[in-house]
Length: 96
Image (cartoon, rainbow, N blue to C red):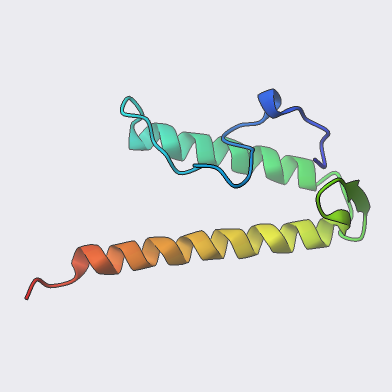
């Protein structure tokens, strides 16, 4: 929402509360990583246009600052990294 992009202009999946981690049968790991890296670069470029205390009104959250947005992204990234850690522990778990 900071860049005013439509959903079709966004890299990756941009809607909430739906199956965002579904990988199609024809998608390779390299494709998923490349999509993540493209979206990350674009997000950093968009965020660099704003000061941390700039405010944007959003329909869902109301008035939010760029600082709030970046902290939310850090929180989300950390949460998903934690999910990956749990999966890895389950994969590495010795069979009894």
